[in-house]
Image 1 (cartoon, rainbow, N blue to C red):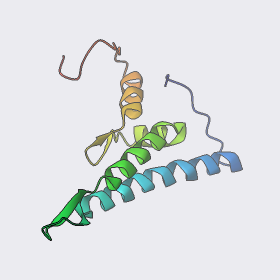
Image 2 (cartoon, rainbow, N blue to C red):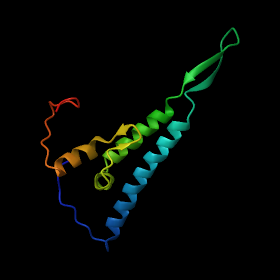
Image 3 (cartoon, helix red, strand yellow):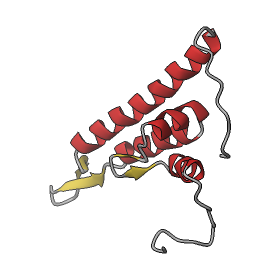
Length: 119
């Protein structure tokens, strides 16, 4: 995502639809995070031949959270809302599009060869 000029037309129905969509995506990610935090780590997968419970790892909440983050990153309005709030994470999930946007706004040069552990 490149630095861009955002036109705000408060009287436009399209502007408000985009804002509503952006806030909805953010709220869905926050809801997915709350479900992830409360979800059981394992599910009951039946019984083995000895009568012991077969645990199944519960991966669905993690997949839902990753889907929600990808949906935010694909939506320019949601990214701009989070950038305005300077929120680069929802829970422990980084929203890289927001980080890139903030770095460009603040005038930092982004080098793809730099890792997260470099100065």
